[in-house]
Amino acid sequence: MPAGFRVGRTRFDFTPREAPKPAKMTLTLIALDRPTPDFAAVFTRNAFPGAPIIVGRKRLAEPTLGAIVVNNKISNVCAPGGVEASERVCTEIARLLRLEPTQILPSSTGVIGWTLPVEAMVAALPRAVESTNGGSILPAAEGIMTTDLYPKVRRADVGGGSIVGIAKGAGMIEPNLATMLVYILTDLAVPRADLRAMLRRTADASFNAISIDSDTSTSDTVAVISSGRVPCSNLGDFERGLHAVCRDLAEDVVRNGEGVRHVIRVTVKNAASSASPARWAKRS
View 1: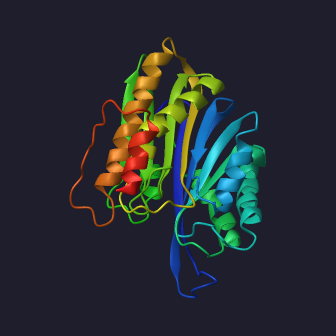
View 2: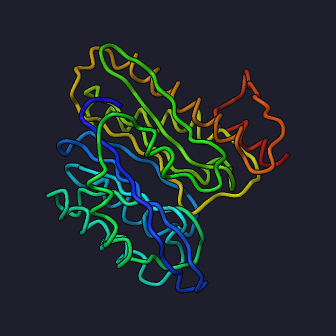
View 3: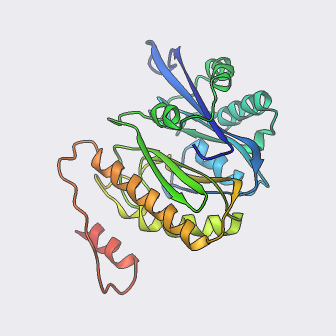
């Protein structure tokens, strides 16, 4: 785990309102030791984004970020009161971590159209907070899984620091992101503006360059957070490390795609622009 972060998770029983039979949900928490101004995120371009995406886009304007909370099982998409539900969960996490609600980034993945079991989530959040530690990112990588067959974790060492990323995603994989949640943590101090520009370039060359089934999801999120604990002497080296982590996570998502039996890597040369191969692929 990069310095300055800790992760935790908890699992609880609940009964979905739309399908009244017992189910289980996992809550995963990624927290910083202190809030950081250096964070970036890109989201789905789907015309019907989920409530966490609506909230997340607003969070990009905030001065600092202190934590990410992720639930599986229910995506909080096309559900009544979805934004209010996300904000309620953020408010409770903020209270437990002594932060502001606007310093919490929410993410959800799972069934579309179902409402979040907010009261059950709020009751379970203290256990997620109590479980946090800075030893390993694996509990978070496992906690965000849905139909994934294995946790996806990648790491790059840069200078005296590191970049560690986790991802979930197995279906609805199409350029302009995919049904994926990706969280990349680094202790290298990279300024906010540079981090955001790097993420846009890196996402275009990795997560926006994969396809399995031509479906674009409503919940895709790729976030990068810097704790700023280690000086970054070379931004070029950092971007190359970030690209390697994102490229490898993107390939892991494709390799684990639902129904996938073969993975093909295509290299395009002499294209008129970076957008040309994507347009050709869509027509084909």
